[in-house]
Length: 170
Image 1 (cartoon, one colour):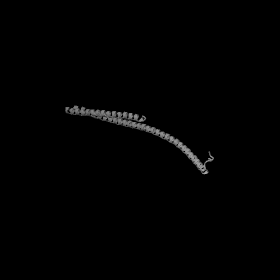
Image 2: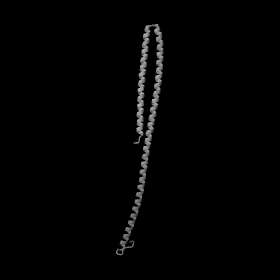
Image 3: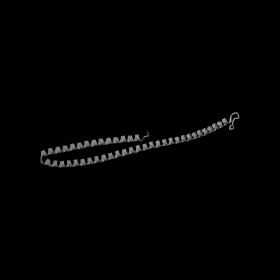
Image 4: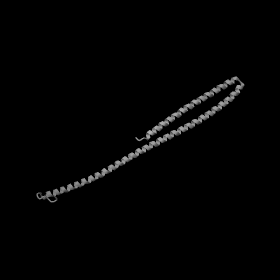
């Protein structure tokens, strides 16, 4: 079919040859475009895979960060609780020693005063009542601090529950 048709003039043969060449060039360009499209499709698939891997790493990093922050919060609460307990223990010991000393001094003074007069015995009784009221007040403070300590422990449990919730995958 490369030879000119006998019924066609030679200009038609040249025109047909030009069309065949143009058709061959268009087919070659189309084949080249299809190859480029396939290469771009492969590149798109690779990029989608890279995006999925990056998203997966980001989710993992976020989970690790949440877990680390929850651990830091827990440690901070533990340190705060230990500090509060130590301060409370020191305060209670100091107050108990102070009150014991005051009671001892008051008792000595009262014994001397009882020997001296009945009026001074009444004053001693009043001081002892005041000391007992202070002890009751101290016991009330101790109960209030115990309540505060229980609130801290409830907060710790809430933080632990939050940390557990944060460490579960989304």
